[in-house]
Each structure stands twice: as C-alpha cells, then as structure tokens.
Length: 158
Image 1 (cartoon, rainbow, N blue to C red):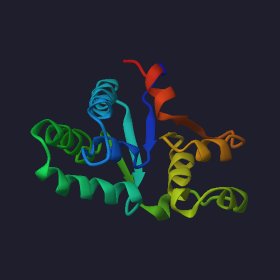
Image 2 (cartoon, rainbow, N blue to C red):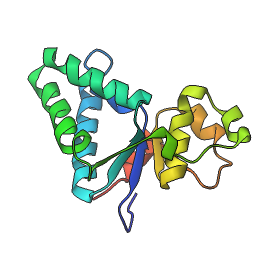
Image 3 (tube, helix red, strand yellow):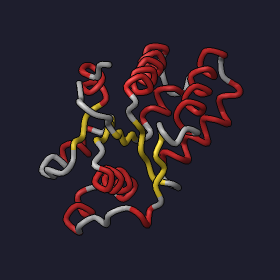
C-alpha cells in the first residue's frame, strides 16, 4: 500500500489483542512490531477518539505489560513512547470534534464501532480492522477506506 503522502490510520483494538501474550501468538506479536516500525518510518499517524475503546485498551496494556516477558514489554513501551505519547504519530480527537454520522450509517453497524467510522470520516483516514462484517457493511460508503489487517499489511511498504 504505497501512498504518496502521509496516511492517517484508524485502528480498532486488534493491535492490542495481537500484542497481548494472553490473546496472541509470537507471530502476531512480531507482525505488530514490524508494522509499528513501518508506520514510524513512513511518518504515518494513528488516529482515534478520546474515551473510545482503543484508548481504554491502550491504558490496559500499558498497565498489564509490566507482568509480561521483556520482549513483549519492549513492544508495548515502544508503542507508548513512539506513538501514544507522540502527537506527531498519534492523533487523539475529542468526540465533539467529529462529524456526526447519518442515521443510515448508524443503523448499519454496532454502536461500539461507531467511533471508528466517525474518526475515519472526520479525518479522511483509512480504517484497519480484523472485523470482516464491518468492512462488508460499510462497503457502499465511498468516503471510507476500510482494510482488513492481513490484506493491508501485505501491501504496506516503506
């Protein structure tokens, strides 16, 4: 996925689950580490909503990782320091700054995924998810680019 400019990427909680040794595999953890390196190198940026599910999971993983193996703690520390605490790499938006969604869109998807769509539309960002149903339900929305993690990562180059 070569892009000419910087890309804003809305991620849901998949990355946190892929890092967690309780929910993941060493292969997925390695994939996340390599992905983070590419995002950093390309100067792309993650985007999410303050108070959303992703922010809560990030705080959870920051706390929980103190009990994990050193190599996993290192990935979490890298993510927190290079992305989460870096406003050039992570854009945290207030909900009242997001564009409201139409009733049609709100009725298509579960309420806990609405923040992903709001953030993506408001910031002209792509969504990176493992949720195939979300991608299918939103396929008709021309203003959205939604990618499944596996397909995106195959083509995401520096």
